[in-house]
Length: 382
Ligand code: NZQ
Ligand code: ZN
Image (cartoon, rainbow, N blue to C red):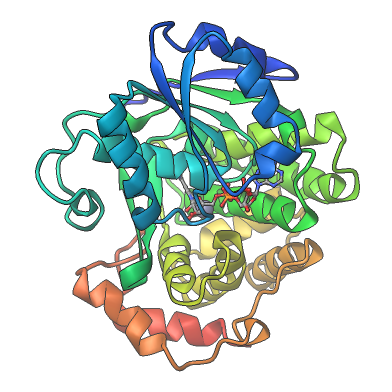
C-alpha cells in the first residue's frame, strides 16, 4: 500500500427527517441561493421541507439545472451570486445540481477571466462561496467529495474539476427523499456507485486489505440491495443502505493508498458529451470493454473479485467476473452494448482524438491512449 494522507471535512447528517437540521447548519445571517433541478423536488415534498426549515433565512432560488449540468446555465447563477452578494449556496437535488453548485461556488469568486478555464485549463481556484446540500439521489458520491463534472453544450465537452474549497460544508442525506426516484434513476445510481468502487479496486493487488475488503463489501451490498430498491422503492432500510454505500463509494475512503483506474469514467464522459447518454448508462457499456481489453493487466484482481464478490473460483474466473458484472447491469435494466443504444463506429476516431488533444493517458498503468480507446470502443459495440 502506498503512503497517504486522509482527510474528509464533510459533515454528514443522515436519516429520516434530517432536513429540519438545515437551520442549525447554515450561518444565521447568510444570504442563501438555493439551487435545484428540473422540478422533482417540487413533486416529492423536498422543496416544502427545505423552505420550511429555512423560513427565518433570506433565500433566493435558482432552478433549472439540467442533468449533466451545463456551464451555460450555471453562469446565469454566477451572475446572481455576484449581483445579490450571495454568501451561502444550498444545493437541493441529485449529483448534477450539486456538481453545478460546486462550479457556481468557485466560478463566482474566479477573477482571472472565463471560469471555464477551471475545467479546461486547471486554472487555480483561490476562493469559493461555501456550500451545503440536501441530496435526493444516491449515486455520485459528490456529497462527500470535492469533485464536479460540468458539460458545455456549445462545444460538446464534459470535464471534471476538484478543489478542497468546494467540499460541501454539510450534506443532508435523508433516504426518504429518494423514494420518488424512478426505476431508471434508481438503476443509474446503483450502477454509478458500483463502478466507482470498481474504478478504485479493479487494478492490481497492493496488499491493501482494508480498502479491498471494504470495496468488496460495498459491491455486495449494491448487488443485494439494488434489485430490492427497484422492487420496493419506498423501503426505508434498502434506500438507506444504498444511500450510505453510494456515499462511501466515492468519498476517498476506499481509494487511499491504492492504484486507481478511471478509464471507464473518462471514456463514458465522452459518450455522454457526444450522444447525451446518462452517465451510468455509459459506464454499463464501457466497463466490460475496458476489462476485456485490460484482462491480462487486471487478471489478479478479476480473480479476487470473482471469488470475494461472486463466490466463484475456477480456471475461467476472469471471464466469469466480466460476465457476472454485465449480467448484473442487465438485471437492473441497463443496455451494455453501444449498438443497442443505436451507436456505431462513426465517431470513434473523434472521441478517441479528445484524449490525444488533451495529452491524456488512461488506466492504472497510463497505457490507454487514442489507439487503445478505439480498440475498447470496438469491444463495446455488440
Ligand atoms: O432535475 P430534477 O427535476 O431534480 O430531476 C432529476 C434528474 O432528472 C431526477 N431526480 C433527482 N432526485 C430525484 C429525482 N427524481 C425523482 N425523485 C428524486 N428524489 O433524476 C435525474 C438525474 O439527476 P442527476 O442529478 O443528473 O443524477 P446523478 O445524481 O446521477 O448525477 C449525475 C451527474 O453527476 C456526475 C455525472 O457525470 C453527471 O453529470 N458525476 C459526478 C461525480 C462527482 N461529483 O464526484 C462522479 C460521478 O462519476 C459522475 O461523473
Ligand atoms: Zn460515476
